[in-house]
Image (tube, rainbow, N blue to C red; front, side, top):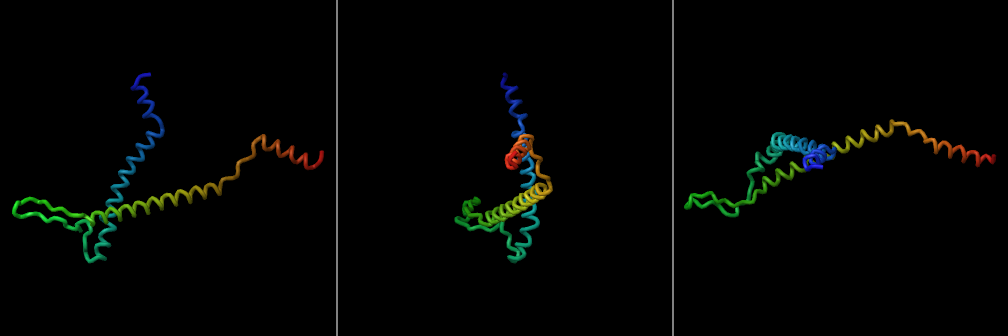
Length: 136
């Protein structure tokens, strides 16, 4: 078996294809969440905090030196970190709601599905048990 045929077989497996689809959809979902956080969630939070934009908040450790005309600002970007934490919480909440919805649908389908009919062996064993109980 050549290496190309082995590679083709590996790629054709369901797990690899499912993983690829998951990664593609995950990256698209990430863009949606980023837009949701930056364009929908953060503006009201900024309004509540008197128009403060978290993404530009930082703690300067070393300011730039105008004598050298070099931008050498060293700062801790805690505002960008706050944005990332908020984005994570939103993603976690959305995933929680999705999983909760899927579990609710599964429970509803399980409740509607009739119990499976007993197999031939179970039916035969039940008849034998009933005959033994009746004393025949």
